[in-house]
Length: 154
Ligand SMILES: [Mg+2]
View 1 (cartoon, protein in one colour):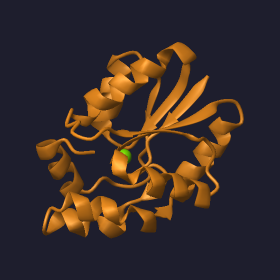
View 2: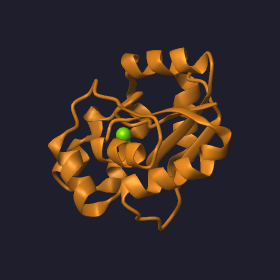
View 3: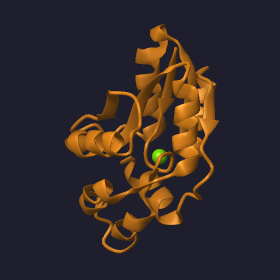
View 4: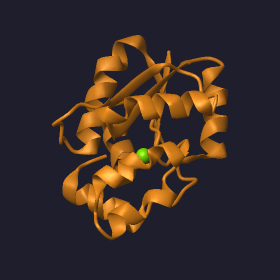
């Protein structure tokens, strides 16, 4: 069975780069600073717990061009799992739709848990029948929420 984890707001603390969305609304700058994220201990503990019985899969709204940065960051923080789903170029589906579509493609392998910090994503995953859990250890910023609602970018 699989345990599927979002990254931003679950294991990666994005708060140091939110200013890129608050002022200039630069998604490129926001994502480009992802390598500097610090580890969220609550998320790391949950990954370790679920990783004892399940394969860890990463499912993020980060764009595909961040694959190496993201993979290096996960390895650098000793997080398990080498299967990483990022948003393909030119894919602007709303996050709930994008993530539920990936979950459906993974479903034949069995999904034991899916953890995300976006309540709309969690609601959509639950409605689609997946055991989704809201990561609530970091408050979601208004800037990120508004930017996502408008642009559907992460
Ligand atoms: Mg997130």
